[in-house]
Length: 376
Image (cartoon, rainbow, N blue to C red; front, side, top):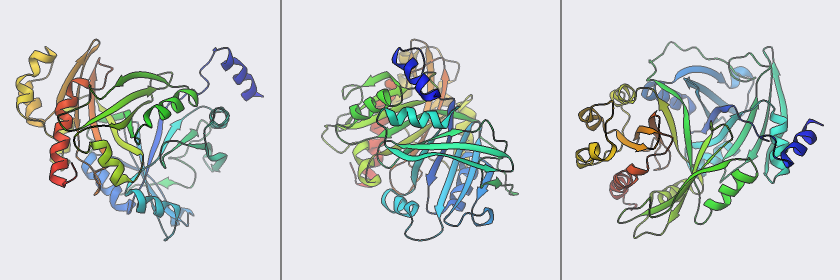
């Protein structure tokens, strides 16, 4: 009945049919979740939160959950050969399988999206333990990536049922990461508009901005991108596709090595990018670097900022400005053996854009890495 009432209201445009509170968690399928958890603690300052596996009654997988600010990463590995998790890793390498979205009603989110054409991943299920219950449901999106809707208002446990608190003695300090700012997906040739339409019609997102191959190009490569956002702006999904160029673009390289569409990078926010990046560099995180000449032209391009340009240059941090302010950003090198997933660290000072003014310098830096890999 509630679903039918909401559907009638949606038809006359009175409500957001898929209200989303934020990103609930991001689950990566990885070859060794125990080692991956150690890496994200040591390198990125994530804190241990929860564990599930043989000791909690799971027979097919093991998962470690790490958290920093509002960012939760679930790192999952199979316990046997021939599993769907193992097949995902074999095809894609370590990568993001689940982008979980926090909602008030996971049943309604499922039926609203299915009624608009989403492919089911799993029907709503109620999971419970001594701490209450969680309702989850799921739909497919690009490639093998899925969205899971999570309703947790009646749950007081550490993470989800089947998980227990994970309290190791090892506790490296956090580095100041706060929340997921946006999450970029790479899709195949001429598929961007199909997925833009999916997020618009199936999930009620709207397009924030569009970049074509004139905006995002170098002498050798190009790509196109459109940014989709939900009603309250807490979820932002840029979607990239390749564009024609003289050589193989970063999106083509990703698609070749990931063997299909998938999440290219997570942009995670900080309130103090200089301190955050300083700590990350000290812990061994490697970042892309642009030429020093970028900083010689910076003040004339972006005007006055609070930060010292000499300090930004030393760390390799980029700056861009829009009508509402400016942003600072930096991009890691891939964090997996395959040149696929990486992280962006971003600090916004009013700006709501995505660093268009940095595209050329950034993509030339990526091309230099591609050339070293022999994949340009």
